[in-house]
Amino acid sequence: MVKKIVGWLVLVPLSVVLVLFALANRHLVAVNFNPFVTTTPDPAPGYGVPLFVVLYAMLLIGVLAGGIATWFAQGHHRRREKHWRRETQQLSEEIERMRRRYGETRPANELDDLLELR
Image (tube, rainbow, N blue to C red; front, side):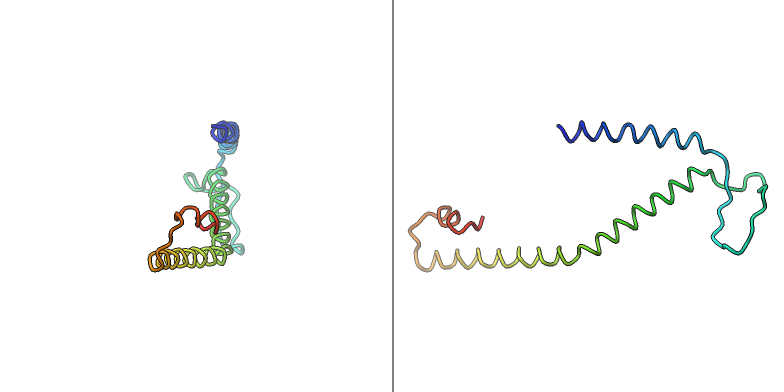
C-alpha cells in the first residue's frame, strides 16, 4: 500500500512535468548525425522533429543503455547465485537420501531448522 502511494506521489508529478515540458518545446529542430555537414537555419516545411521528441528519445536510449550495462555488470552475481542454488539443491537431495538410507527418526523440519537449510 505504501509503495503504491509513494509511486503515485512520484509518478504523477513527474508525468505532469514531462507533459508541460513537451508542450513548452514543440518547435522543430533539425537532427543530423554527421557533425561535418552544416544545416540551413531555416529547414524546409515539414522537415525536422519536435525538440521534446529528440530529448525523450535520448532519455529512453540512455535508460536502456544504463539498464543493459547494469545487466552485464551484474552477470557474475547471477552466476554465483545460480551456483549456490544448485549446490543447495544437491545438498538437500543428499540429506534426503541419507535420511531414507539410515532411517532417520527425527522429524525432517527439526533437522532442517537445526541446519538452517530451508
